Each structure stands twice: as C-alpha cells, then as structure tokens.
Length: 377
Image 1: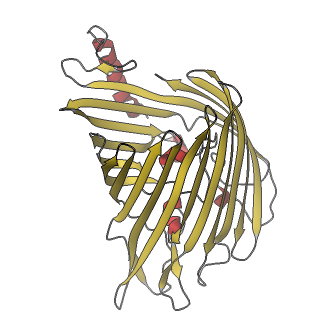
Image 2: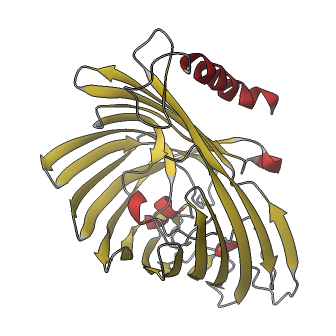
Image 3: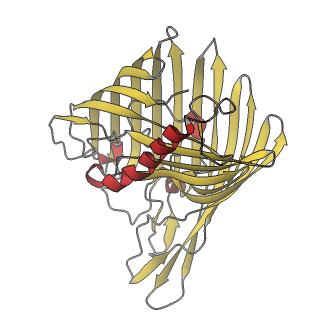
C-alpha cells in the first residue's frame, strides 16, 4: 500500500518546486514540471458510502443484481466503506500543435480494499489512444450518475486494454475504431479441451454531438475458440450493436438512453456470453438490454436522477437452470452539491433477477454518500 502513494508524493514535490516558478501560462489546478515544457495535475476524490441492504445480496460494496440469491432467503446488512475513493495523475506534454497525454487512474475496489487500476493510457492529439480505458463499444458519456458504484446490470459497461483511433468526419461528428482485449467468460462444452481468445475484439462507433446532446451508434465483433483434446477446433463468433445518447432540455436537465443487442452481447456487460447447444457445440447467448434515465435539477445545487434498466437473454439448452435469464435494476436519488467540490446524496435501489428455471429474487437498498473532490477546477 505504501508504494502506491510514491507517485503522488513525487507530484507533491514537483508542485512545491514549480510553485517557485512562473505558472501564469498554465491552467488553474495544473503545474509545470521544472525545467520542462510539460505540465501535471493530481485529481480524484474521497467518497464515503453508508449502505443498508434490506434483502440478501452477495455484493455489499455495489448493487450487482446478478448476486441476488433466488432461494427465498431473507436477511439485512449494513456496510460502511470508502472503496470508491479515486486517485488520478494527468500529464500533458506539448507536441507541435497538440499534446501528448499520459493518464493514470485507480480506486480501492481491489481485493480487501487494495488499490486497483482503472484507466492507464497514452493519447496523442485526442486521436490515437493506447492503454486501458472505457471500451469503444460503450457510451461513457451516458453512464448514469448513481451513487451506487456498480451501475445497471444489462448496460454496456466495461474497460480493458485497447488501441483506438478517432477519425473526425465534421465539426460535430467522428468515427472511432479500436482493437480491444478479448475476454473469455463462457460455459465450455462437456468434451475435454480448452478455451482460447486468439484474436482481439474489433469495435467501431459513430458519434454526433450538438447543443441538444449527442447520439452514438456502435458495434463489436469477436471470436472465441474451443480446442478439444482430440478433433478439430471450433470457432464461435459474437456480435453486438449499441444505440445510445443524451437529449438536453430546460437549463441543465437531460435524458439518457441505451439499447444493446446481439448474439454474445453479455461480453460487454461482463456476463457469460456463450454456452453449448444440444449437440455440445458452442453457441453465443443472444440478449438485449434497455436503459433510460432522467436527471432533473431542482435548483443549481440540488438534483435528482431516476434510471431503469432491463435485460433478457436467449439461453442455450445446456445452461444450468441457475443461470441468469432476466435482470432489472432501478435507482432514484437526490444529490445536494453543497460546495463546488463536494456533494452529499441519498439513493434508493431496487433490483431483481430471474433464472432459467424461473426461480427469482429481489433486493432493496438505501445508500447515503458524501464525496469531496481533489483539486477540482
């Protein structure tokens, strides 16, 4: 743990040193690295959560509806944490008419509260990005601002290693293409063998942005291979599409939406995305997910969010009856921005899951949170 803070201590020394130099030519909250033309900022926030569960759920730190038991069990639980606390280092070095950016971000959702990498990438001119970041398939600008860390279950929400390039098509639009880390989360055939991820996923998006908001259409394609101990290999393709966006109205209010679908779509919502069919051949699990939410500002300092999410899967015959068939996630909150760098809020969460065998379970949670930003500017 102590080694994690070393980079941030180095930054503190650089800030102290640069304070003696002229910083009129750098934005507020940034500092020049001595004897270079590079600049640096440190950011993030400290967040405290008080979580009260009124039903059993085996994810006390975040509201993951796939962890709701379906055996009819009862119980309550209280949990206090600061795991979402986040630390950020952002470096910018001028390179001609643009910047070379190096970005590192982490939180404490690792095992037993260990520091965990979230984002780490280099970016050149806002076009070429290489490292770990939000998938090009998802829409990171419509992530619902819930107090809950998990976000909706049937929502495209994943980050991993990638290399991405943006192509500007107009002042208001661009195309992004990427090669991304493949990921194996499948139910293997009964016959002996092993699964292989031998090619990167390919993703593409088109984004159009205007004063009224934005709209995005994206897609992905991937392949997973089963190599039996004897016999020929079996390749299974997975695909998906995502239509999402934001519509602004009134002064600060907005509506967000997302629809995802395809054979293997759970690849991008971190669920099982393939399983054997009746012939023990690997098949993608088709699915669809819907998300909609509205954020309303009652005043400049007080806002509310209501968001609902529903997903269903076309399961294969070989999946066990305990596998997920349908999931629902809903949240409503009130947030008070009592300082430009701090807020407090309370949120009610309701979720449910139904298995292939029609066993189901529901959970209810109330969460209170306080967050104070670091070096907000």
